Length: 268
Image (tube, rainbow, N blue to C red):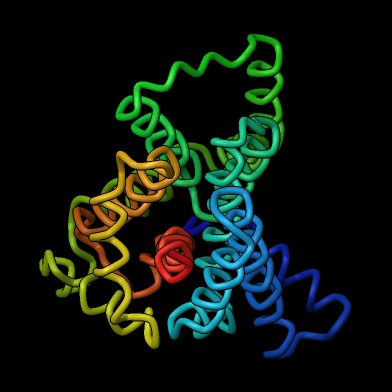
């Protein structure tokens, strides 16, 4: 009951074609890491300029933690890839694609695959006072897409295992681990600050200048995009800081928006 199945399905598929070995176990993360770099490149081109997109992709692909987890047989790179896809699709009003990516995130890691996109985009709309009203039929279609992809595994697990699944997966592995530390470092509120400083090497020195400049220019020509990236970073970083169970890998979904800000800052 620890995790939903998507990453393990990908590994099982790799085992099927390549044999049950270390290379096959790591391959899905590696491919998703490359895919995440391409998503950031595409986002940089949409939000900023070609040069900013190239620099953002370079910053992401060469940052220490992204490289490390891009070769690790864990679920965090898959979650980061699908969250990035969803969060880049929402401001472009590509709601079907956002729904598919959010659904895949939910069957990769659980409810945060939906909570993060809804919270980040909703807060962005509230802060910027953007009047976004998706047409009813496309919105219903997107919700149906999400439900068709995300919910069957959860219904099946409940049908087979009953209340044990709800209590263990949702109760312990999501709610209890958020509220109570599983490891001693969970009590350190600043845990992710050194993780981020080390994990974003060799671009660490640019993190605070890029964030500071983005905050100062959040009312300028690129205000909407800068607000979106700031909120994206703030919600994910704040959520995992508040969580009492902390692991180095949890903070990975904040790397794509940070890389986009660094690409913008260097281009500027």
